[in-house]
Length: 193
Image (cartoon, rainbow, N blue to C red; front, side):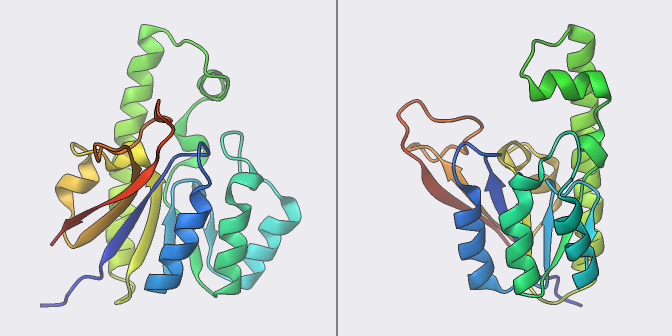
């Protein structure tokens, strides 16, 4: 039986802390050949030329700014690590939803249902992409996802094995889905064999 590589999930807060500091620390430790990231959406930076193209155009999408991924992309290029987007362009949201989500506007009941449907499709896509890359390497794979995708009832936690989750959490060891009220942030680990 072929042993599947260890999956190292890193929970991202999408900016309420400097997520890259922990990402860099973990990538130094595990030396992955592939880093999978939802923030790269559907971009595949698997050659020096593709990294250079991204740095030249400095654009990801309406939902993700170049600044959000710049440090990660520079680090992966320097370490010759392939940086692979495992999500849909603009996370699958149409323009009206993109605007409302970016501006944190109130959504209608119908829009909320649409968002929930898209979130489910995104989780299924993340799972498919992870399974594809598990077959491409024997090295650990680092996967960067928003903390919400790493909650206990998530598809990934229930369908995958041989993983470690490293995620920002509160003092009660609950994965952070928003900034904590007391401002204290810790990192917790969940391991599944």
